Length: 272
Image (tube, rainbow, N blue to C red):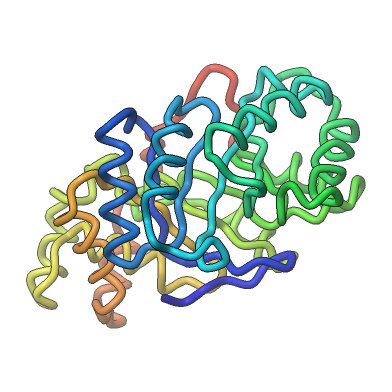
């Protein structure tokens, strides 16, 4: 599977998202994904499933050096001491000595960005995380982090799919050579039943979901982390890599509505 190179790490372009999977279901899903060949697992403090993810990793025969693990700090724990405590807890639950990528899960309405990134960079310097990054940051926040604080962020993880335009953020990230990691890449299941995507899939012997996923993976600097608990769905997502979309397909996808945001909590920043 193709990787994106960013800030000294290799980020597999297709990963497994684990939001809303917990306990034995989560553990079984991660074990299944690893057995199928996934090497990028995404979790977070807020998901309350790091223990299950850690158990699955420990049970697998995948060498640690071959595995990419991302976790995230919740926006209530962005003060330096709270972040360190949250990080320690995450590492212990994951049964790891080091994570590959540690993200700020959401910006908070009130936060001290320089202090946050000083703490994150120290965790990186200490070798406890190989890279640092952000999630759900808009362009204004990214500019502060990248151009003023000069933090070496390895990605911005945001909602991105065929039904949500993210051109402004994507262009900024591309200009700075920072990958975009797409969560909700199937629009929380909506892509699977879209008539346009179904028709394109029929042409290629693929599902609508596979078409939506390949549309993302065909873009430079974009990775995707679809959630999939069933082995069949995990394999189908892997197989999406082999779908070949043509210019006619891309034109049809460009005509879809682009304002469907699935994740928009009250504490979200002003979206671009």
